[in-house]
Image 1 (cartoon, rainbow, N blue to C red):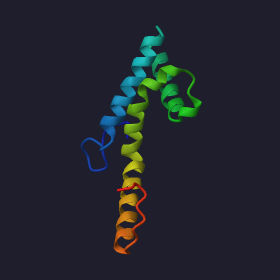
Image 2 (cartoon, rainbow, N blue to C red; image 1 turned 30 degrees about the vertical axis):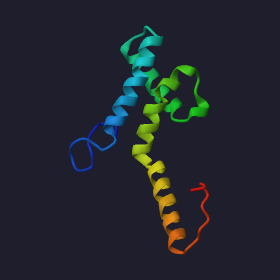
Image 3 (spheres, rainbow, N blue to C red; image 1 turned 90 degrees about the vertical axis):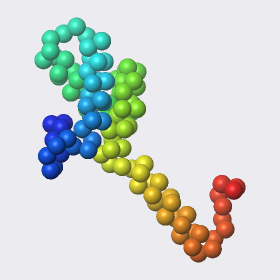
Image 4 (cartoon, helix red, strand yellow; image 1 turned 90 degrees about the horizontal axis):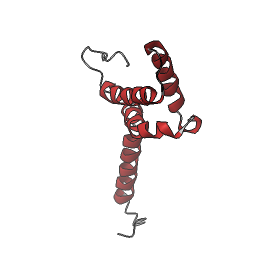
Length: 106
């Protein structure tokens, strides 16, 4: 994924999201430290791994990248999309069975 190449050549479907997320993390490292490029790369790798789970975040600075992180993870796993599809299918099933249990008051 981080190479940018998809399975069939070209750009991978989630690479643009990864690239934006990576740039955000790199910008945090560059703003918070004046160290060598190699050290920046190591720090960026640490930040990427650390911010993969919000609970283990060492500082509030990483919150700037959460929207980009969420977009990237959604592209990879599609949990929100699958949840929405599941909700729609459940409602269609209720409508087909004649259930009038309207949870939203409409």
